[in-house]
Amino acid sequence: MKTNNMALGMIALALAGLTSQAAWAVDFVQAAPRQAKVMVENDKVRVLHVTFSKGDKIPMHSHPDLVVYSLKSGKIRFTTQDGKVTEIVPKQGEAVFRPAVTHSHEHLEGDEAIVVELKK
Image 1: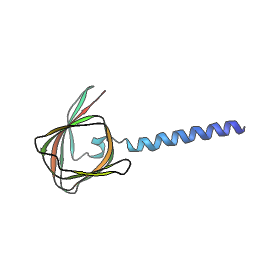
Image 2: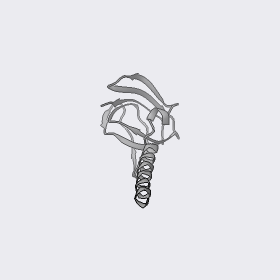
Image 3: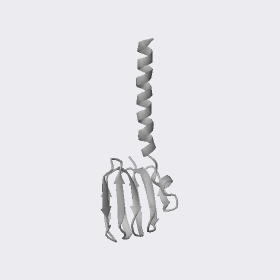
Image 4: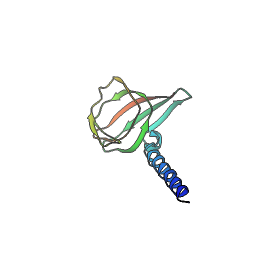
């Protein structure tokens, strides 16, 4: 009986770990439904037009590898899952590749971009 209880406890801990990780894996469009509009989606990519106003705060969410093309530059504060904070000011007209990430962001100024999420 003791072995069964131990095994059940280990399974419960594993499931709790999976559940807590899943809580961080919110889709970007679900996290920012007012700001993110899907332009194209298929089995290879999802293309989004995103528009943020000063003060917008987007909760923790995940992206696969992506490319961001800045249409309008504005200061953004990103916070990663581990608590690291970075502020950036994307250059208008610049495209950058970003590896998969889980983060939240706060828009200190208004900005606008095209986001191309790459699917595997």
